[in-house]
Image (cartoon, rainbow, N blue to C red; front, side, top):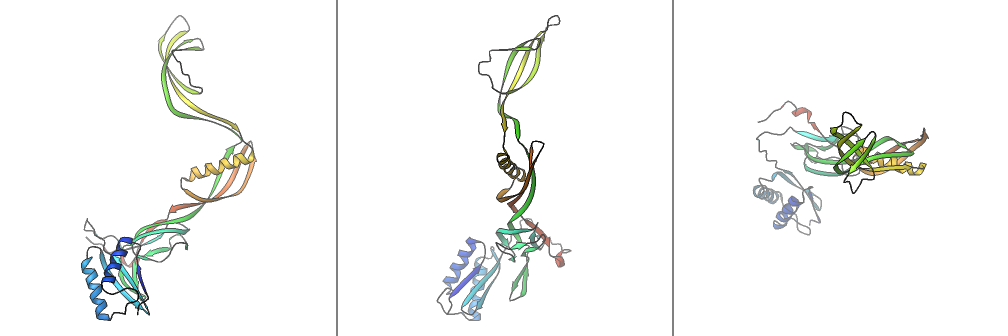
Length: 284
């Protein structure tokens, strides 16, 4: 009697297709075991039906359990075989998630991996024997750590363009400008001048002025406020999804707060490594 059927795959669509075929052929919980010939016939049936999706399938019986492993068929439109390879870690990290379409998963979620350590092998094993070698494909997201040094002034001043601008005309007499027909004036602005008419005898001229509206931030921060700003600034510098952070230390010198912050971020750590014994093989 079988009490457990385990289909090893990350592909939900293929999982349900294989499960349905197995059930239709009497492989499910609380059914009696099949003999060798019956299993071979069921495997052949599944391979024939899904010949464009499945390259290889194995039904292994361990006690009261069936374990089903399969290898997806990779259609190559360019008729060129991809190099046989492993997926390795791009850097030291803890695996956060895996989305693997090909290869044998060696490391799983929560495992710590070193840089260049194999996460997904191109070698497919059955009972400790290599039955097939493929090109591992997929994506691995890891928790990676960065130490960031951030400086932030206690007296903070910044000017940022809002995206609003307008063109007006002004009469300039010596160093004084008189704006013409400018009803709604910007509180803060950046100005670019272009002379239209200039009097050679008198200190007067007509200018075309382009005004850019500015958002001005002028603030004095205490230490705790400045520290919060350094944490935000550090996140912006990383440009990654931050899971957590820890302020290691900070100090104030010359009216500037300097903080060393440890960030935990999510990052794509997928890298590839050609399997050594297949490096020199080329296919077309």
